[in-house]
Length: 483
Image 1 (cartoon, rainbow, N blue to C red):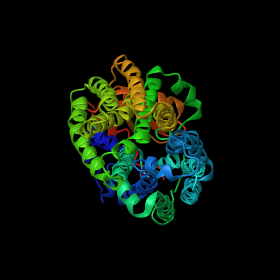
Image 2: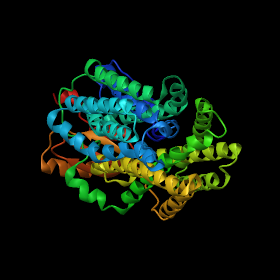
Image 3: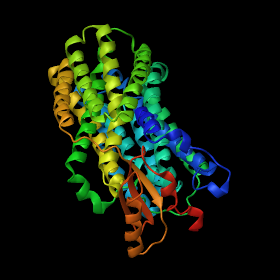
Image 4: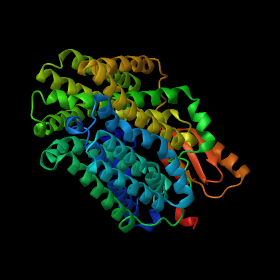
């Protein structure tokens, strides 16, 4: 979420690289205005879509009490079901966009999202809302949107583009928790669903009016899933460990919101829950930043990461034992979101560090799938435990899951502090690729290099602290030279 961007800002030296240049002689070094506008437009599409999904989190458990056939289990299912359809469809949607075009597939996904919002808005039963939420998740446009962003940006600016996309989703989460209860007070949760449908229509307009049509649509190994690499990625124990982590993290988050609104309603009117979420989230982000800087600057990522997992578990235990004290709930929520933000920032960075250079897109695809599965399992699991064993059991169960995660975290390998880097090398023969690979590996700071001939791209793992950028730039071919 927002922490993803904050980490990337530090880790990828975001500020000096992301400049908008007019000098066409150095266009391969600076992002163009056209690229910047396309990225912002695509980020806004992700923002409005996720805002509608997230606004339900802090209010739905209270609203659902008035629906027909409601049970706590079905409430949790309604909260998490969009994660299931999102998880199973996002990679296929990305692949379909390679075949049928980015904009048509994204448009279809947004139409499905809009239909799901309308179904949920018109439903007076929990089953109808579940169907609507499943359809919302069925509009799984994330992979196709990222692929379109890759079509519209050059390799050297891909990281910055992904950082902006991550920022948009982070801001949507914070804003959703801040305004969800307030908006629900005035227009109700049904009104939020109608608003979400309008957001979807707005996203379609942005897509077709503000996002340019790419000149060339091609496969991007760094940001899309490669079927030939599925086995390699799924058999990597360190990547599986990280996938399990993001699954458990979002399982804990969704489970929390199955019961938290009900507990807070004992102390504060639902319309004022925003006054709790917003300051807690802002404070958690402020406290989180120094830990992320420390983890990267002094290369203590495993230590900070493991500590955040431990803090997450302690916050769940605190909620289990102290949920009858309003002040204690506030403190535990602050600890929870501090740990959550640190982990949300660290996990994608670890995936990037650990995955082989040519497998990053595939690794991130399965990472995202695990994240959405965690949302689904957290909703269903939290609803089941709340139904049969009460509020506190949800926190105890999440604490037990996080303890297992802590064991996985402290036994993981120390990550190599390497970043992914793409280099456009143009058309080369097999012999030229082998020779060029050896030359790239000799550059200070380049740890791994592999050239995919059909892509015309060198996929590198580099240590940015010692990387000789000038030497690396000599091998880069500007995109305009290829056209």
